[in-house]
Length: 292
Image (tube, rainbow, N blue to C red; front, side, top):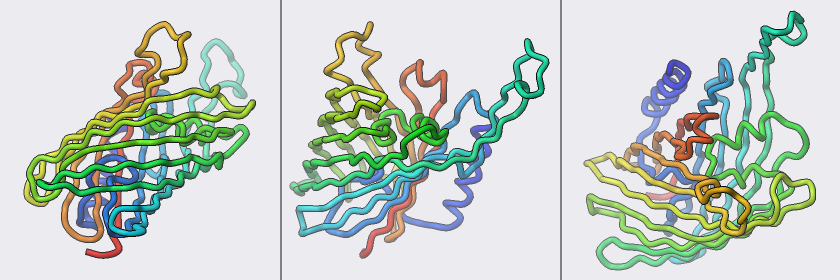
């Protein structure tokens, strides 16, 4: 619990002592509007087997959304990982100082850059819909690097962003409500197709993607929860359907207001298998709108 509490308090004090503003979900790029926006998201995973994780250790996503007009937007993002932690290699059955020691890891890695094009449409009564197509380019760091698997568990439903030798094609459609109303929601669904090379960890597969988001606006705060994930729909050799799922529950609080828009959230691994490796991640999302 102490390993979770320290980074959470550290970043909470840093964030709310510096900025005011708003963010709407844990995603790097929330549904965009006619204003250009830059977003930085930080995820700090809580691994159970690691010692002394540095508070700055985690995954950083830098995203940018630029409107071509009131309906069309260009979206792009790039993830970067910093793995800085200690590993206890103590093995009591061996009396060898070369085997029994603390190993210090300090590595960095890039993930797969995303390019996308989205179309949004505003309806009456604060409702909206949008469609987007995107591609993740194979820019992830290749070869043995401890930062790559470290990034993988920062948000398991985005593991495709950190796979080397892989190109991902995707499409998503969504319908939701936001604006002056108290209750906000969004329902999104789509697919991702993995095109992998011979050196990739996975084979070519088709995944369904989904996000269910609900939020309540309380004065200047937005309290949000969402359930999102990927489902492998082309692999049939798994024992159970649950084994095909990579899902996460995000719970966060966001301050609504200025052109600088921060949010603080916790990403919780929904599957027991991944929760045995890491409880989840603490996240910070900071967006800057280039106009009011």
